[in-house]
Length: 396
Ligand code: GLU
Image 1 (tube, helix red, strand yellow):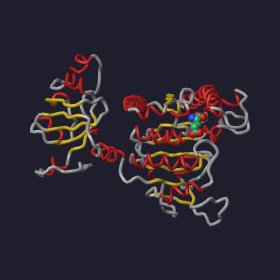
Image 2 (cartoon, rainbow, N blue to C red; image 1 turned 180 degrees about the horizontal axis):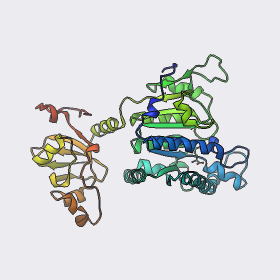
Image 3 (tube, rainbow, N blue to C red; image 1 turned 90 degrees about the horizontal axis):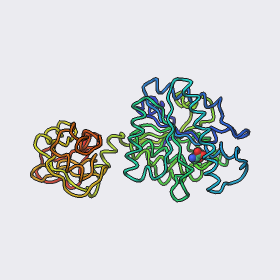
């Protein structure tokens, strides 16, 4: 924990991909129940500045329920689940409309993506959501994400957009996540009650002490609260992503962070790419194995992807997105990776050129059997050590 201010907002200014989450209390005017447009315009200006600087941005926006409830006459008190869902159905369309107007006025195409918990927890859906977001970013659109509240029932809900945003950051390999809310960050104690409470500028590690502080902090209105923010921080840092809790109530909330406003940064110990490779290497039981020829082995050592052409056998039952072992012809495990095809499809395309995949399978999948970003070489493969290494070592 660090109660001194770090020098800069470098994790934000130098990020390669940024996820920004805005809470309902910022977006929706408490008096009128409508979109807080004047504020939103300044946020949009900030987002566009990041994009102009070459930093792709994804926005996770709450506000659907808050916008919809007033319209439906659901004024006060806690809503029943079905009332929240009805409010979200009414509010989401308004939210999307506000973003479309503001962003398209600045020539930026906005894309609405509504996710459910299952989209991040089920492998196949996770891969689909990830691929969609990648395509949107590659095509220059600005994805605006919310939970699909109208279909997400109690047991299968995130419920708060803090964790949803952290999942989105993880899914898209973002290296910076900013949670804008009505609190400016984490204090050692509740500053409203304890005058000695100090602000925490940097959290290098989420310790039980930090968790306890989150419990004592003055927490915001809305479903998030500090506990949800710490849970989000856990997900983000494990994925190699910096996360910041910052006050969003002021105009130009992102520019303020860059100008040195107080905020709390959670610092990861690895980059997103290294964290991902660590996760792949740490898979306890790969679902299957691909045996490759000498040419493919050379390509892997040079840091290239594994193409179907270099695969000579597929073993085990696996699906797209599973981790598999990559074996040399003599059976030695030389790498592990996330495979882009199921065992059945892999067996059909192995030994064939990537350009033939569409004809053989009837759909156009990835050119690679395992993309280099999803592949980790085992250490003995690089050092030439004869004995097997018990736990796979991760290489950058
Ligand atoms: N998905 C909810 C909405 O848009 C907000 C969840 C949250 O408060 O974090 O209204």
